[in-house]
View 1: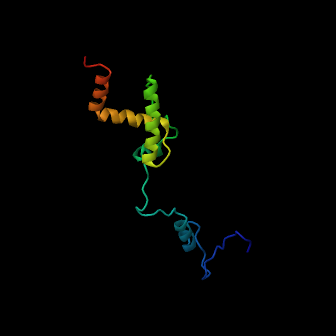
View 2 (view 1 turned 90 degrees about the vertical axis):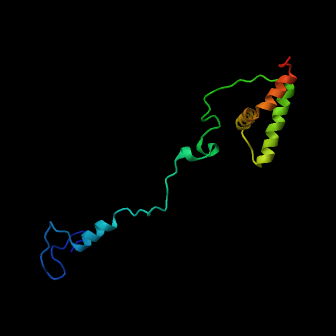
Length: 124
């Protein structure tokens, strides 16, 4: 018999109906179904990841631009603070991330910000 041709008779010599699948056809169909693990994997939602892992660029999720003009002494202290943050974290930090973290830290500690404003004469 040619390769790929089907035998119209089963092993006992009985004619096989074309409408009824043989055992081998049934087995083949079952074995071609995709095997899926049972609840041992979980789809990760990108929004559930920490900011540093879910974004493609440092500007992702930063649609607001805050231009900040600072005194020379503040600029120097900001650069020192960024380097110190890298030392504390033990890894390189994007400048935008460091600046925003410092900005947020100031919001959490408004008493210190008020003290600085008083030094600048805001309570006269």
